[in-house]
Image (tube, rainbow, N blue to C red):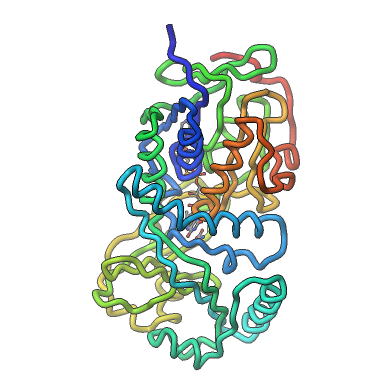
Length: 382
Ligand code: FAD
Ligand code: GLY
């Protein structure tokens, strides 16, 4: 007889990991299926910024979700360390979003005022004040927003921490297992069909990042999503050149443990090609040199790339499949999947348990952008 599970999570990135961990913590019997290896895609490529205020200006429904998620990290870091032994290297030294021209200066000053008015901690620093805080930054910096609460961490460690903690709490994770389609009965999902046979559960969560819409097309659902490639590189500076994370339009510098500095990231929509290109990395190098001229003396470490999952309205999909009961979707986290992972785990676990989530998820429901929902491919077991 086949083993059956309370929940099957498809995809072992940070989103699948957060969901598996949260559900395991709540006592569910969870199976995670990953077509490649743990944390092999976007979740290992990420710079690990928790940039709720630097990446989102303060308007729109994603901002409260991002802030709530950011606030969950200190407790989560302790929990994950205790359960799995993995240190996600959470750093709370703030983020400096710097202006390199007058237009940016005006825009960022307006955002600081708007965020202050809504009760956020945000401070405008003049060019001199920025230089005092981070002396290695260039004279071209005209000023910057200092966002004390925007931290950063090691994204791969976070992802592995979620997954290993889920395992420690009883979850089973299978690598090299690709989910090809879903099985159904009377409009309800009954499991998944894979290259390793079928697995049974009446709750299946699709957390396949940029590849989610391909898998969901099997259900007749056409999600309005697209892939966005991002390339990064890292250098070793031996002595730390920065304290805070520095964010600018088109380039960020994230100081990591051991004198590492992560420099990211390019943005190239509509490609699944994950090759690192000379064009991408040299553009980033030029921008990094403008921000911090001393970077030219740093020792080269490595370069990498992966694919972000984006939606046409920039909001993730968090919710039930519009047609098949028990099939849930968590994708489209674009540039903020690391930041949004803890709250996504909670929201999806609530939906699985039939509890109303503590945050309003109406703006993220799956139906909002669905282009078409038809019968082809749905209801099959192949
Ligand atoms: P992924 O990590 O891509 O995981 C999806 C998994 O599903 C993969 O392992 C894949 O192999 C698996 N899969 C796919 N199809 C199947 C199938 N059919 N069967 C089984 N398994 C399947 N976010 C931040 O918050 N802060 C940052 O600083 C940040 N920096 C970034 C920098 C770069 C260069 C990039 C590319 C992204 C960055 N992001 C950042 C965004 C973040 O990485 C993503 O939003 C997040 O990793 C998405 O997680 P995911 O689990 O949805 O997708
Ligand atoms: N959040 C940073 C990136 O996606 O590049």
